[in-house]
Image (cartoon, rainbow, N blue to C red; front, side, top):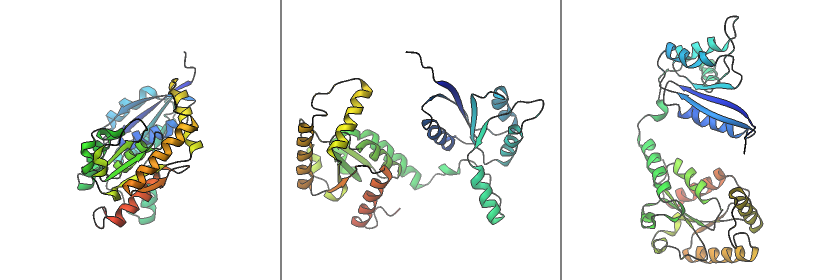
Length: 282
């Protein structure tokens, strides 16, 4: 099937690894699903010549947008020059992610930014903790490797489509080693779930109508039929079985219906800090 959407390119430029610009570029792109996006990268730019080589071939192209994060003042100045249209050069379409923040602080304090690159990833304990937590969350997603639950900071349990995986990844990004376990009528929960502290287990619940709607959309998306997946009677049995297990474990039950991932995560993190004094303060 031919994709007739308008095609555009977001080209990430950075004097570091470009992670910040990459993240923002994808956030921008997802807001325009009617456009077919391509992504290009030029990172670790350390001189004006390298910058111009990446940009000038695409000057005047209305389907090409540069998105950049430069802390190097020379590169920022050169981008300002390139963005300004001239008689002998077409316009370069670009977005400066850092400009408003840096300029606002400079105006307020009359202090100049350091211009040091890569400071976001300055090597420290917090950075390594986040990386370790992300690796842990991926390895222990969807009930994998239950023997590792003893090492988890957080264990999420719930029936299918209660936001376990996205919540796991968000919490991992905040530095919490998070595992998640799906609860089904056909499978017995792993024994390790009964051997860990109840205060680090969180049961996720949502409304039945919301859940069946999400599941139906999921099946439509993949063009596949899963028996009983959206049957109200079956879903109610799943809910009751999940509630029984959660009560048996003595874990905190959280309703995720119509709540942002950030809100649910904040509730979990607050609970942890209250019940594990000092352990999760950083």
